[in-house]
Length: 119
Image (cartoon, rainbow, N blue to C red; front, side, top):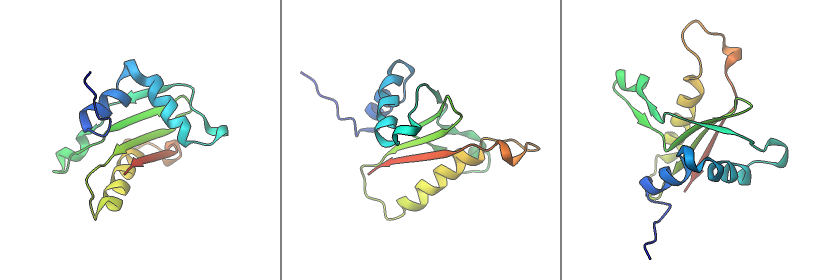
């Protein structure tokens, strides 16, 4: 029997970040959230922040998603210790938050954004 480690990037993304497994992602998110904030449905989004790439710094999230209430999620698995991970996590959260609106759109359109980091 072959066992796959869910901490490995490819396995984590396949297990939690694919459309056919979105029920697993919903269950995982709900295990972290409070009872009153449970997710019923989720749409998995493109994890590549291409707007950043144009400026020279592309970030690739593990999982980027939005639920039925418009709440955005960045879910990251990090197995290697990084002294700067807190800054990286904040940067990724900020990208998900700020990329919700385009130039000329109102700030009130920004929605709650939750970052879940597994260290």
